[in-house]
Length: 231
Image (cartoon, rainbow, N blue to C red):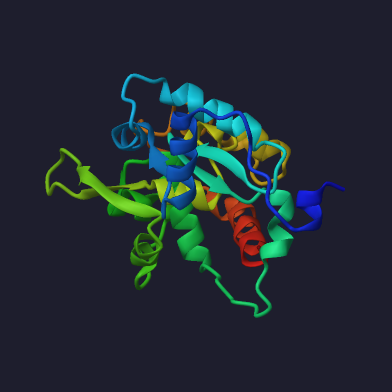
């Protein structure tokens, strides 16, 4: 055991340049994840490769008690998932979404941008009170322009906070129809695979079948929410 370990002194990565230390300090002090442009604007030297610096810091912190991660092209320090048990609160706080809210979120995730009417058509039932509003209050869903059809209905998409909450870097990291089928969450033999998977999220696709497939994704999202409650 080193002297610094005995004295409970935290050893930060050594051999960093002044600019690298500036980037490290910015990320450590930031209240929210920072994008490349914001970091570039704040550091002293302007003609440096910020991405290269971030990758170096990411490697330096990869085996430490905090990690540098990138979610939706924004960078921040986070506690590793395997240490989440250390951050659990003594008091249990219940945060449970209704089945309707989970189904609505799943539809938006896989069909975005999507209108309220399209969500209701896919679910086969009208919206309950505040179902969509709850997702917006959590900042997991937000308006995204209007669809170019009569009435100009508002379209909705997921946010960076949604990606951050579920620890997803990109929408393309979400499970495909084959992966959901293998996990037993849906019957993939009766599902049009075009409505799932990489590169399909921002294309409109009508599902002509009336099967309620989204209730089967309930288990996947509910499990993630339950794990978050215990973190």
